[in-house]
Image (cartoon, rainbow, N blue to C red):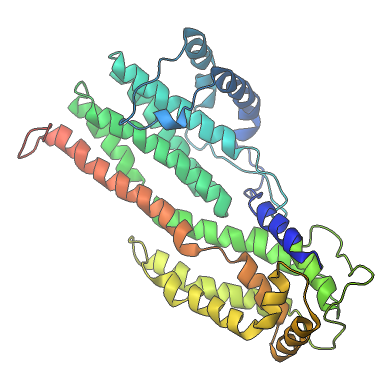
Amino acid sequence: MPIPSRLRLAFALLTLHSVDGLEAATNVLPRWREPLSVLNEHVVALNENLIAAESPDTPVPALPPAFRAACAQLLPRFMLGAGDTLVFDRIHGPESPFPDHHPLRQLASVRTVLARLALSEGDTAGALALVRQNLALARTMLRAQNGLIPIINSVSVWQSALDGVHALALAPALTAPEAQALLAELQTDAGLAQLAPARALRGEFTYVYRIIVERMPQTDDPDLLLSSVSTLGMSPPEPLQPGEIGLGLTDHPLLDPAATLAAYEADLAPYFAALAHSARYPRGLYEATTSVTLDAYRQELGHFFTYAVGETPPTLTDIALARADLLAATNPVGKLLALFLTPPWRVYASLAYRRDAQRSALCGLLAWRIHGGPTTWEV
């Protein structure tokens, strides 16, 4: 049966989701979308990898005057005022697009590169303004995101903003008051590394996992249910083709949605507790919790798991072994969904903490600029 290719398609589609939110009067995105589209046209025409030029360790690109003039007209339209928010479109599972995240990442990159260019031309005040606007953008995105793809984009904007801070911290012309203003901004963001992963984990459960589990069909046909699993329920399940051999009908309970969701929430509970308890990244938590659970599921499903992800047509022996393990397992398709859909939490939880470590280091560099230190700046 052609499950493997459909599974690969499902995993690809799993990355295509956005952030949920209620429309609010403070949401700036509706008025930003048109100028963001115009900015994108200018960046595409520039044909320059701006993200690669964000780090102060790389050469400052020479941006054409026409591009800089266009940015001078567009960038004032992306100012965040007091009370402004970013309210992303509601999602309905992994098939929902997230059109706002990439343009915001692009906006951050343009600002950072322009800030580095301003520094190279002696315009420290202009660079400082651009970097502070990026810090506000990153802060607002991290507080608004829900889910794994959104946190990747939001943390990437934070990275860009911090690269701009780093460039300023290295600039000889940075004054102590300017360094103090940047330091105050960074200290404001001390709690983002705890907030952002918690919102990402909760959003992934609420807007992806739960939706997929609840739209799985109720059927006593394992192969029909596997077809739905392979497309994450986004397409009608396909029965076996004539001549294909499969597991056959069974009265064994295949999927218990309530138990599946409860097990997933139980897996998330220690992460929420750890994130609420400490400002430090919870090292070893994934290995002690999620990894143990998923390994147990994989062992329990045995040949049924092998059958579901098999790359070659099953033999009659394969079918017999898979059916036996299917009938011996409790909630087998629920556990299969957990194996397919549970992300490597340690990777995503660490994203924001890595940026927070960079933020803390930059606080130290800025403190040196304000107060001096026991050695020279070059050292």
